[in-house]
Amino acid sequence: ASIFTAGFAGRRPVVPSSAEALERAALRRMGGKARAYIAGAAGLERTAAANRAAFDHHRILQRVLRDVSARRLSVGLFGRTLPLPLLLAPIGVLDMAWRQGDLAAARAAAAEGLTFIASSQSSVPLESIARACGTGPRWFQLYWSSSDALMESFLRRAEAAGYEAIVVTLDTTQLGWRPRDLDCGHLPFLRGRGIANYVSDPVFQGLPPPEADPGERPRLGPGALPSVLALLRAWPGGTLQALAAPRQVMQAVQRFIALYSRPDLTWADLPRLRRATRLPILLKGILHPDDARRALDAGMDGIVVSNHGGRQVDGAVASLDMLAPVAEAVAGRVPVLFDGGIRTGSDVVKALALGASAVLLGRPYVYGLALAGEDGVRAVLQGLAAELDLTLALMGCPGLDGLDGSALVRHPAA
Ligand code: FNR
Image (cartoon, rainbow, N blue to C red; front, side, top):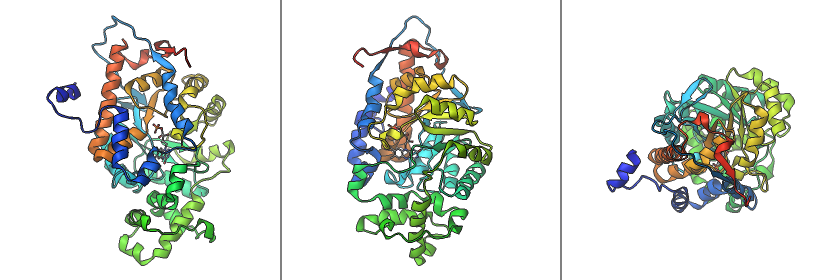
């Protein structure tokens, strides 16, 4: 209601209210490399487009005369009651959008009472993000490193910093083929700005330097300065010490490249992860119902249906199209979360109706961040919450519990 009232009083919103205008404004504001990294996707970006198009294949079927004067949007997840079925997706290298963007976004999430999922590839260490969350809910997204000791160290740190669940992302055994990034020629420096968790980790610091591989050695060009500065800021012991030891800084980047992913992971490795933490574990990047069943067999506590915003496999199935089959396989035994293309309140409604317990918001919050920092993220979250609330009221649905596939009609053209 306050959003409408402000509008009538002639006050403009902090960021544009339509998802498309928000994206356009943010893309205009960002530099070329940030634009490529954030808006870009794999290959010809067909899966990123399919993620969006999939929402048009479902239309909402409204009901009338159903007393919608009081709406319940809250949802229970792992012992917490959240005000909305909406979490902030893990996004790496938020420094690209806003200086110390992880902290601004985490503060915005906490102010709205929403869960912030901190990325392994954050631009500041996970402990700083936890402090920015204050008492707000936070989860940690883990890339399973090729060093189990490092992976376990991340888990220890996340537990100590008060993270409440671990999201293990499995669709990134290698970085996808992302032409926009490649054509900017800045991938190594991206990594430099997104390795704060690594350089601040005692296990990482103790690992031997990788074998010299000249092909992988990052070369510093003029565009590298912001990346190097961000890396120095995250360096343990301070900037001065890092400046005194540029070789160690460069070695850290190389070491990160060698350690960041573990392409030989299989289902047989999951018991080790299960034993390594007492926190709930969710697997992110699940699209096949059989993989969802295997996750349950391995004692996992939740699933995130996701194709990484179309950034990994170009031509992959739209994330939304696999939500109902996965939810059916899970049959309510654990929460099924969803991401990929959520832009409006009605998108959230459709995902919930197809079986999601809650959704993750990706690029739109980063666009809010790029435009107005913490205030911009809050404005995006508030706008989406208001639109979700209105949509539920107007479709005759007073609460999320009554929302299922019967609220949707498959669009004939699909
Ligand atoms: C991501 N995503 C992501 N996922 C993850 O598990 N760890 C990460 O570090 C990142 N980093 C990242 C950076 C950027 C710039 C984007 C756009 C995405 C994927 C993210 O969590 C989520 O799956 C998608 O963003 C959802 O799609 P939409 O909402 O952006 O369409």
